Image: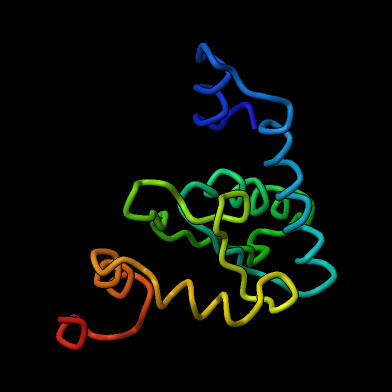
Length: 136
């Protein structure tokens, strides 16, 4: 982890890095390794702010599997921001969960029904398979 630029720059900054932040990459890396072994998961997908955590997992798998190509991959997308500049996420207020045990289905629908008009086109351009002509 010390070779990652994001970790180096955080440790050298005035704010530093908390123990939680430092170990989060380790936890997510081991989680990917566990899923790789136990569930056959070969791809981890997240937003761009998770790149370091995802590559920690692919690196760990490569070191533990000890073969030239363990077929573990990471894929990131641009971070989805609300119109106010804040991110969507499980730790943020108003998180959207896909599981009905975490978010009542009507609230899931209501969330997308009440997205500000200014955000709808931007979200459609990056999070659907609709063509640009269909989006308008």
